[in-house]
Image (cartoon, rainbow, N blue to C red):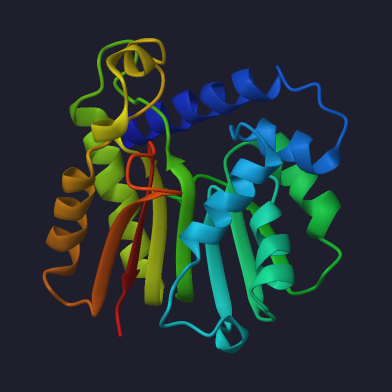
Length: 234
């Protein structure tokens, strides 16, 4: 498994660094959103809104959050300003530049903690109320070949870890293959595309029915390519 994990780390850094180098926007919010792969700040904001749309959760009562693949840390700003989250936030990312930016932007708040490491290999010593992975399932780990077993194995590992580290619920985003044109997939060979049925199957196999609710949907509407899965445990 170590060989696979090294490959995951290498391809992840290459994927995001190649995109970050193309960003020239001077607006801070636009810049940090585009660096981590979003088309714009407004699209990132929409992703945050749908990823955190738990009807069962009162965010002011959540004590701790884990943000896997936190990028430049923008989620914590959204949670505090839009969701009323006042608890402790931990973000982890494998790209040094992203963690540097996150610490610069949000590190002065003692409630925020940013970790530079591989979330699959780090030794986790505690659990969090909510664990999120917004954009983690973006890389084709079978590259340069067509997406296949390596990417599916990565998705399983990532979702399994989310489940293990969460007390109350998890949320993750993905690009829904079922809503994508063939040209979009073929022109982005380094990206991953998952069917919502595949994500559902992974989640249900991990939880084995031991969850209160599971919602998988496209946003902002049913025919959009962006998908989100939200799970409440209890």
